[in-house]
Amino acid sequence: MRLLEYEAKQLLTKAGLTIPHSQLLELGDPLSSVITPVILKSQVPIGGRGKLGGVQIVRDPKKLKTTIGKLFSLDIKGFLPSKLLAEEVIDIDREFYISFNINREQGQIELLASKDGGVEIEEQDNTTFFRQVVDPRSFDALCIDLAEHLKLNEKSFLLQDVVSQLYRCFINNDCLLLEINPLILTKQGSIVAGDAKITVDDTAIFRHPDWQFEDNSADHNFVVLDHEGTVATIANGAGLAMATVDAITAKGLIPANFLDIGGTATPEKILSCFQSIMKLPNIKVIIINIFGGIVRCDDVATAIITAQQQIPHLPRLAVRLTGNREAEARHLLAKHDITLQQNLEAILGDIS
Image 1 (tube, helix red, strand yellow):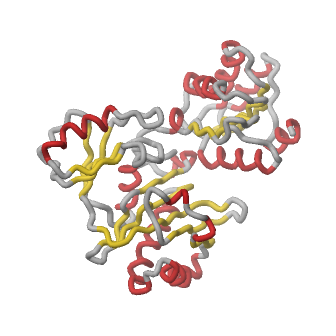
Image 2: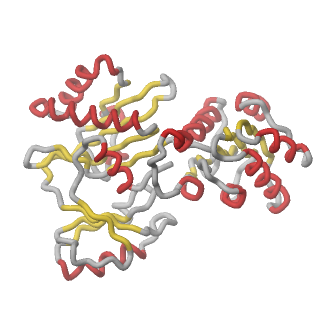
Image 3: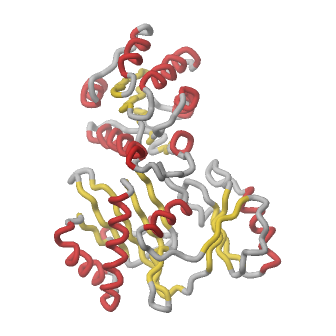
């Protein structure tokens, strides 16, 4: 589940990170408490907001109402915001990039950082990044190396506190990605998380009864990876969805999409996922890889059967369902001559 920026920053605050002073705005909220200059940020679950006009600095209070109205009506890659984040304008000295993610080849957490941050970070040469697998036993040495790479030797102790807090946030919240871009060094000498992107593994929701995030998983976690791809995927939980895509790629096949249906997907929402996949032009097979924890396998089976009945020219289906109500799902699918595979390896061996 990908969090909205304000949700990500709530987790950062709990972990002790410094974020800009801010307030959340909904359509129709009074603007008397918004003090200019202010940065207004559209809260949508997608990257690239800045380039598409979803982040605006307002310095003239007379332009505040008009700008807020425009942001609420601005469609960003198919998403309209229900909230805006209004933040103070930071006095920036330098900007950096830093993230934690899962290195799947090594099965460990990896730290990635750059001495340059901001909207152009994706265009940088990856060889210039600081990249290191995290070993908690040598965390001090890692932070010293990072401070040297970022040319922040005089702030090494402060940077170590920030990196430690980010790492704890990543671990404690079952994150798959935690990205700060930019991480800001202010002219006053403090370090502030200017923007935040966090993806949590929603299959771990049973460990987090306090999670009250907006549900972006079923409708929003559909990402086209390659319009010419031949293998489509449906999985639940961002971790399993990523692993499914990685396994397809490792077999020399071309995954067309990433799709996490989340832990609370209904048959109707799952059916809409099939309809999204059918917009891709070259799909030969749809791999459905579900581990039923919160999501029910028989709900997924119902959606599969409905898709076969309602969608013309549905590609071949390769299905693995295990866990919650697996027996009921197997019974439903057997009536429609759909066989369940034991595991993803068996599926990939059959289609490759």
